[in-house]
Length: 99
Image 1 (cartoon, rainbow, N blue to C red):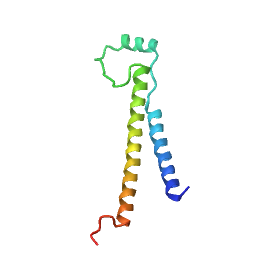
Image 2: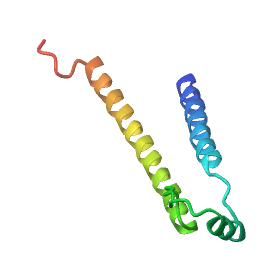
Image 3: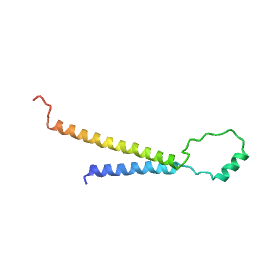
Image 4: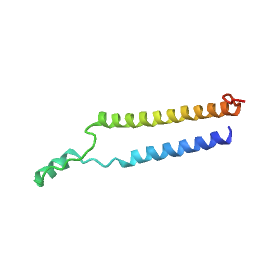
């Protein structure tokens, strides 16, 4: 592998590690249904709305959405890098020069 590929591989590995670790550690602990029912009966406070997935299907949907977003970003970066390399190659050959 060339040095450039090694640098990109390390960069992608570190970036994916940071993304996945932040997603894994950001989910909080859920309250069991028994404790939740006791809390509702004991505290007549106004209802607090917490934005979180309601079930495993919604949580999985969020992870799939985040995965597709990152995959599309990496694909677009890959395509952009190849377009830049191609334009540099054409520039080096002086394909559009008037001489």
